[in-house]
Amino acid sequence: MLIEMVIDGVEMPEDGTAGDPVAELLLRVADGDQRAFAELYDLLSSRVFGLILRVLVNRSQSEEVLQEVFLEIWQSAGRFAPNKGQGRTWVLTIAHRRAVDRVRSSQSSTDRDIRVGTRDVVVAHDSVAEQVELSIDGDRVVAALGTLPESQREALVLSYFGGYSQSEIAVLTQVPLGTIKTRMRDGLSRLRSVMGVTA
Picture (cartoon, rainbow, N blue to C red):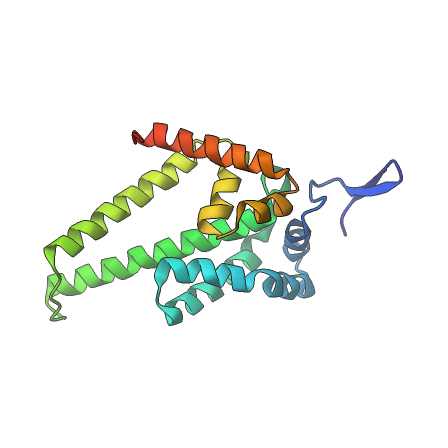
């Protein structure tokens, strides 16, 4: 049960979940509430699956990773801190990490099979070089995202990893659209600077 306080006649959760239904569900899941977990799954599974599918492309692997993501949420919901960000962002971050881990694992497995000669795979040199370059760039982007203020990082994660429009992000985060646009512009500018990219 959430501890609540009353401000000007309006009940407000003391845990920072005001206006964030996903955060409220995560806190209930952390207490072992199976009904809250089912509600959370119904609320986010299609969005999480879409994000995973964009990373993996393979539908069956994406379905497996979706199950892994929600298992991790069930097991680690107690680590969610509502005062550090939105619940939806926390869930989408887990999903993105799991999807990237699956890509790396699949690539490692393929590389290992090629090395020991268990597969007869013909891979174009340029394709391998491109995959390595994309992997390195992806790691740099994740590291660079970590340098951004939470508000900018949240807007960019919801947009680029979650697939939300700026208007949807404004509604989700309960922040004016103009502020979201500014956060995204400033965040992208800072990312370019951190990564040494010139426009």
